[in-house]
Length: 353
Image 1 (cartoon, rainbow, N blue to C red):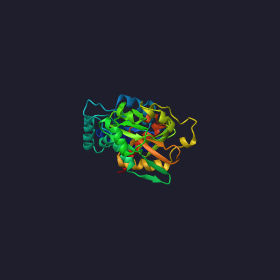
Image 2 (image 1 turned 90 degrees about the vertical axis):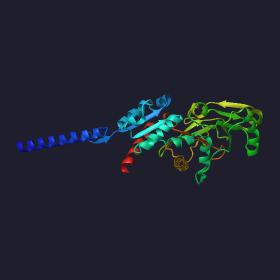
Image 3 (image 1 turned 90 degrees about the horizontal axis):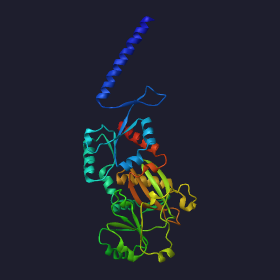
Image 4 (image 1 turned 45 degrees about the vertical axis):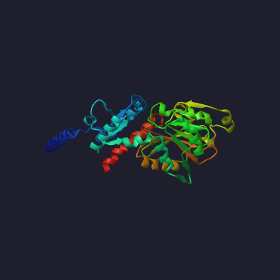
């Protein structure tokens, strides 16, 4: 019996030494490990370190305590990137999550991507930059020609005016566009100004607009907008109140330019409202999945949302009116679960490779 106990003690000692060696080795590699799962105290898993570079406003709306708590339980650690220190001196990171503007930041993150190919950067700065141009954004959807048995997706007819507001009435007449028009700044860089919309009701008011801008034919859509959030391959749709329909009678009586701040953001959720089913019915899931898959591929992005409207009076004709990079996910139901699962899937995908 004593011999057995000694052998056991000896084996335990060897195991302990082996464990210490392993721990030291892992420490050398600067990998952090944690025990996960209450019922599995022995199972070790690597902590996924996510470095984030976000504005203070975005940090507050996105990194809510509920998200950080769930992430910790799943072995994900969010670490703030210090913009005053070289990025390569920080980390090591498995994933870098960023939404900052400016050429300097773009250069930093692009250099980092080249020198750290093992790190997943969400998302490539060039791909984000493309999306800042509304002309490119709408062209990406227009080129899809997405029409199948579930419905048709397009973009409203539009015109890009880069300068000289006095030329707008002639350009509109030449393009054969119909009033009223939604006017949006050409650059969609996430600033408050880039989200301001104007509704122009008559020819004379067009000269009061400020180029560079995109003029879109206003499509009556029952005053409801569908916000389609995309996180990797996950899709979540919420309804939002939007600009009300404009009747022909109203159009004949209205004049001037009416300005609106962020329409869909400021609006209350329309999910619980008592809406006409023809207006409230969500776009068909298969159509959204196909649209999201195509746009992920074309845009080279994994974190974005689409603002979609349904042509009022039609059941299956939809328009994409905006695309935003790394939108306000904090407003998306169950975003904590969807986002943490997505981050884990990125790292697991890397290990498989």
